[in-house]
Image (tube, rainbow, N blue to C red; front, top):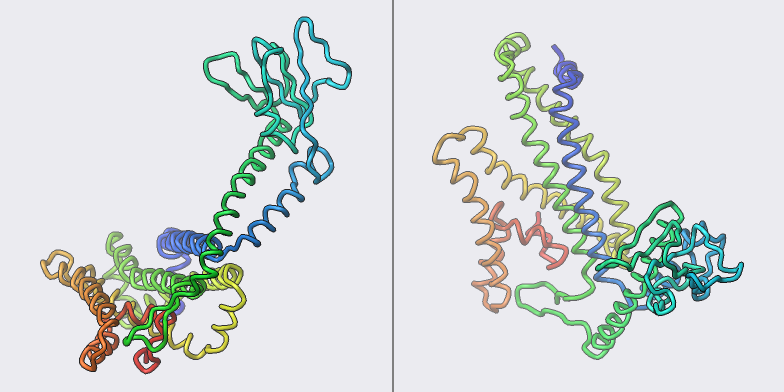
Length: 396
């Protein structure tokens, strides 16, 4: 039997498809979305300038979609008009209560000071009605021990959301001031660099946010890909073993054909994940970093490809060694060695490599290079190559 036909037959089984393809892909895509969201937020926050933030706030204020839906214009409204209602208070016809107005319920309408409400709703509300029992879609009740606001309709909800959004924008003005102060400090402080004998070039402590995002994106994508690949074989075997059809299936198809079909199922699984994850990763990355980072990466594409291959091989070695414990030694004390010794070696290798950066000695340089070329121990330097400018010969 053709292994490809057998693999497609496995995938066509609904339960096996959900177990092997659909559910792992959902988990993998969720992990990628979370990681990309974090990367985008980190890049935006770390590279944002006061001018960019101020321009963004101005654009949001001038193009408020909620205000346009409510009043037919993007422009801010004048301060809201205050109308007081009571037994002896009868406002004129200009104070008729509308759905987009705020009503304030209080026991003493004549003594209530609406200054804080006027400040909060300024630009997004036309009228504030202070009364004892009037009603609207947005109602503030001050008659109890604690104030409560009731949203009774769509218009009231939109007015509250627009006002709360405007208040949040006013708070972000403090961030503009903080960014301006930081930029003043950076203007006379200059760009800090780490100059170390173990680095091929000085390492900038600022301005590498885009490269750090690249490292995080590629490493996360490779980790999820390896997880999907290495778990596929075990899941297929477990599925058929629990159903009691593993040995009859191997006997009918042949051991070689059966295991080739498992590899093809793995390839299908990884291909579907990469087909969805790679375009999304490229899109989010190119839209979250500045143009200078993109141009920098375009200048050395062969080294970028070589680095991706080096990271893939390093992580694959670490993952395969760790997975041996699950494949062959699940109930043996050696499973501890297979699972935790590689991680410990990787951690110790990383600590020793970074410690060696600050020692100017040929022997220390030799130790540093030796750590970098080891498959598992030197994984961290390989992953951080775009940041620390590791020699391409070591990556190879």
